[in-house]
Length: 200
Image (cartoon, rainbow, N blue to C red; front, side):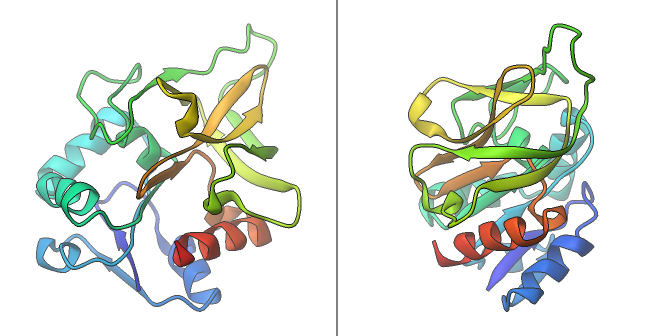
């Protein structure tokens, strides 16, 4: 069973449909009692950092997320803005993130050679041999973002993509995982990644 946190910061229909397509049972909720019993959790998100973290505070789920991340230590996957919210901070805003990763989110700097946001399909390169990124094929995912995380520990990086520079697009530490791209928009590559997550 996979729980999707619906904090009003993402259109979760595509994600829900893809999980069902790969045979996973899905609960979509912001109810704290239901959330606290999650076996696996996905934190999706789109939009601005401060608005996203404020929505989590307004929904009253911060303490529950910390409990799931640390005391219960269930697998948690952040997607796009969800990845940023799992970091300490973002140049996009002033509020503190969840701090699940020792990382700060910064604007993509391509030296004016490429357009920002980074939008569309891009080759994605696994690193540090994390099971979330296991695949028999070269991996390609769909991206829409202007910011990406800079992490303190290179061992936390599980995927990179090249866009004027090497961007960190995947993070993992213990039971916590996050990706910059949108698996729900990435066809068979996204299906494989979500299948991997369901098995972790």
